[in-house]
Length: 276
Image 1 (cartoon, rainbow, N blue to C red):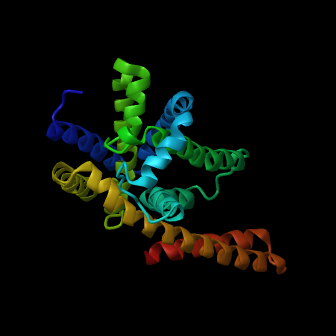
Image 2: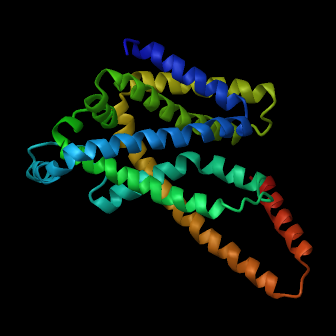
Image 3: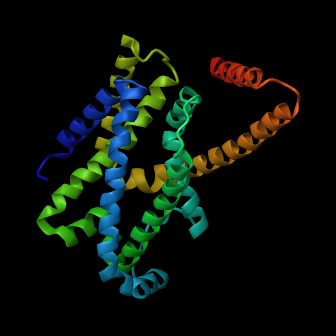
């Protein structure tokens, strides 16, 4: 878009720092409005691109297997690649989602299960949709730092700049939770000056890291191993969920008042929070 890397990084990191410094509630309100827009835009590109690239999937797959096209792999198999990608999606926002769940544990929304089910279906569907498009366009996609932007350019032409902004917004929506997670682990008071200064310091570190380390390196190596870590975290969370659920069901089977049970749950959450 005609902007130098240093200036672009400064703008992106600066906006992310300001958002993270605003605190969890403000940050989640902003990201919550951005996420569905990004998902819808990528879905639109995926559906339109599939008309042209899905017939070429067989040729693209043959080019990969024959070594005609060299690609950087996130894992030795489809399963490992999937665990890596899914794991990094979980790891980057796990602390933020955990805190939100704790703060909103008394909140009840009758459509929550529907929202969760739609989201659980939509995310894998869009990723598979775009992945198959990239296989059909593997020669160009393998050489592109942002393959999704490449598809948008071929569809919208001069309008691809709009999707470039969407990509930047997607990076922004990921960077904000990372900054918040790093800072909130050390400083709990989000309204204090120390918290805001820590956000600035963390953002400065991010700026220089992204300035000197190529995007492909961050994506293909660092994010890959973070993804494996996230997959382990996901496994621990699932196991912990069933342990807590078993304890809760055991407690409810006893002749204990419901209010007493709720107070016990709140006390347990507060104890875990104070230990952290």
